[in-house]
Image 1: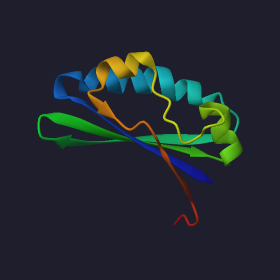
Image 2: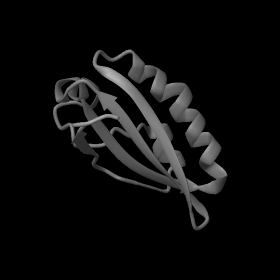
Image 3: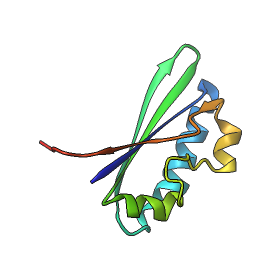
Length: 101
């Protein structure tokens, strides 16, 4: 299994808007992609901003590419999210999950 990890940041005032966008529009879309196995949204306060860490789970890199395209390390950040976020990673990291308790 593959974990795809990405980080973004927004002003505290925009936290709810980004969270709603992700959980109501993006996560449901991911569920329709073969090989998608779930997603986690983590947050932490950072000064006057909120940082999000998004972790999605996939069966394989082939499944990741169905979502991200051939350049799987490039972040997929929709225009609506770009308007809300103040800072975000242009690239993601992929980790092979080798153990699960």
